[in-house]
Image (cartoon, rainbow, N blue to C red):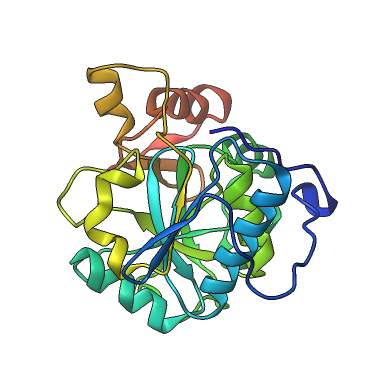
Length: 260
């Protein structure tokens, strides 16, 4: 997936505010969803896709987007309707939490009670890791109700980070698949969800450079690590780059491992 997003204030993209909802080149539709391609497109088309996708999210919609690991489905973290739709379309148990996605490391401190040095957080993010901390008081109570912790993501994807900035609000994010099904690396792999979505952003096949067994390993998604206890960590889910993360925790920051 080739993106042409330029740097801007806040470290992301200075997007032109486009009036109305544009006609996007390379788009198609099925049921509710509009399928918008961002693979090998020009800057203007990228901006139009960002505008349309962010408009859908701000209207309470649910969209599918490519991340740095797998495809995900997302709503605004402030949208009770969007959060509920994610659970319904995936057939996901309500006791399985959703992560939130922000655009900058500094934003993590607003939504969570960070217990690790800022240098470690900046080393981890953006990247294929979900950091779990005690949730902050500003989070929507309808997101993961009753759970004291929250997972936070900053994908290493300029498109996703620009989308969050364009929305002005974090995203509630999870994998684009039916619960108990494999994670997806292309939009064709979750066609059964298209009619339940407002926008599907097609970034092509997400490739991590592997084949066969390595491709299956890439479907694990992000590594999920609990950092809510000062001085220690726990791997909740083994995902991409897990060995690198463990080495960083143990050898660079001398964190002890605890088990839950």
